[in-house]
Image 1: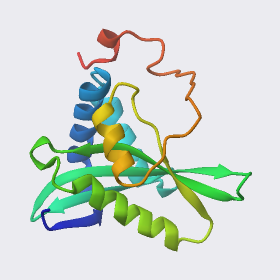
Image 2 (image 1 turned 135 degrees about the vertical axis):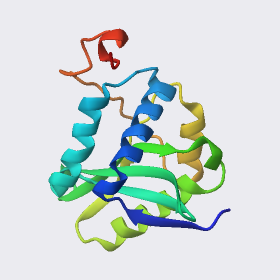
Image 3 (image 1 turned 180 degrees about the vertical axis):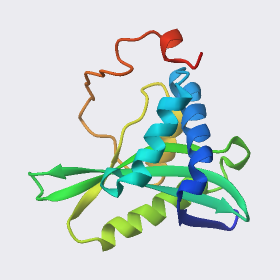
Length: 164
């Protein structure tokens, strides 16, 4: 395993976050995202920390991976779930402990933060590599399926989503 440092991302990391999100969407869901909308979305997190926080995995001076955490209130648990989103590991750093390091860092923070009920994430149904990774770090598959009404991407074709 490489020597991996986990840092809170800053606006100076925005272009890496935009590129990582775009590559992840293309690789896992075959979606070409609109870069202007995506860039605005990344910057919106920095402008309002209540929306979430990005973490970077650094190997030396290189950005090797990323993860965003967002928050969901659970009345059943009287606590907050931290949602793991926007996970991306540079292809050259895969299978080298980058996700595991990000997950451990965030998990340790969550456990040490009063009122955090747990960690959750969603994964594309056919992304078996990611599912295996999540199981290896100790996450469990739930009995829930996800449903949505997507007002931005949901009703558009892939060509309408892509940058023109």
